[in-house]
Length: 183
Image 1 (spheres, helix red, strand yellow):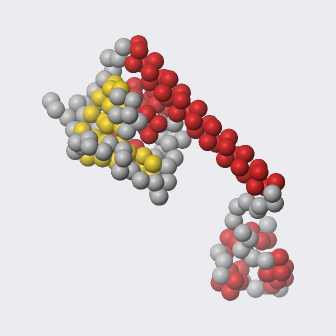
Image 2 (image 1 turned 30 degrees about the vertical axis):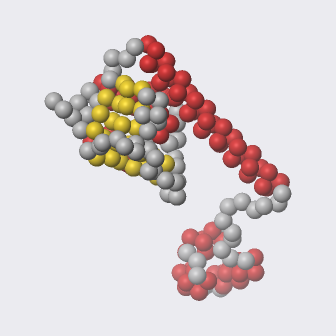
Image 3 (image 1 turned 90 degrees about the vertical axis):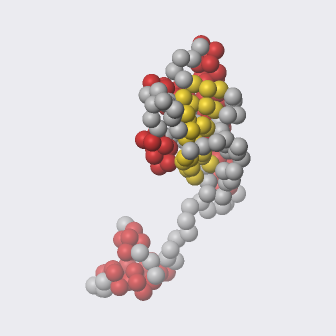
């Protein structure tokens, strides 16, 4: 029985381009996520996994597009191959069918470890960047919705019995913002 050729494409953000992934591959259907690969809780990955059947071939541009940590990668590959799905990683030129030789398994583990290491490095650089920005006096996070003067006024008016809903509408903020002010 000949199965489908299914593609899975992932980029980390909406503005990244997916065109280079699986360019030239003949696919019956593809699934595309625009989110981090930090875990497997990705809507299109889950849809792809639910779609795949025995005899299908899953095409993925590279190992780090499927998973960013070794445990998730090994679990996905093992679960799919046990179900009779073949997985082809185009960039690494690796194909997994469930009857891999020890060298293929080693390659999968090494490439998965590299993807996990890269993700750790990205997080570390991000933390360093945030710390450096804070040291320079840069404020992190969203700007306050209300000024200190407005907060004091809102508190007085609520104490006087005014409606939180009406104050939220007047100041153009959510009721949650008003509740947070009362904090």
